[in-house]
Length: 301
Image (cartoon, rainbow, N blue to C red; front, top):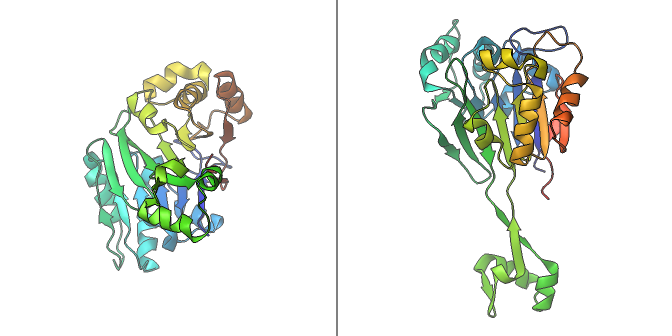
């Protein structure tokens, strides 16, 4: 049975707290696992969450600030220690190549698994497979940063009432799906588009075109809200979003389930983020992320 869910490994911003580890997010998408922004302590959080190195197929780093990348060294060494048998690909801003290499080879270890390096240099598709296309879009932060987005191809759903109206049933339904036509009836006449699921991942950024491109029509959007709205000046100065800004962007983009995360250590009341997100007009499902949360991708409509 396929599983599509987000496993939250860490939710702090620059400074971890007693209750929040540095960033780390694993997206389970059917048979694949994509690890986003492994900050310091990610390997231990994986153990706590029941996630193994064998679950990883891709690693996506938005930018090379420590709270989003210092865990790379341990995660890559664990991939090698456990001799993960399948290919693992790493995506990260091309301008940070030297940082990736320093983290990958920060200490001595036996390299048994060839992690493929696939740096990101521009907006657009990075990889495509039967169940998703992975895209990147540039964000606005003091260092080069990219957000990531998964888009499942649209499918087809057969409409029972339309099939019945044309007298089609049983094995003939399968024939029509395979052939596209049966006895003068086309597939389009008895089906409708089943929209593919979409997932967006937006970390450290000011509001910019990339935020909206990544969020557009997402079933599940993970987005930073480092600051509360009263500190919007600080957010803009340091290249971050407030809770209200993130929520308004999600509302405008038609996001179904919004996950706010990457919280500054200055705030001790997580419900304040929820209040400000609702005040900003977001009416969909809302999660104020906590370490070790498991959040399913919403079912297709």
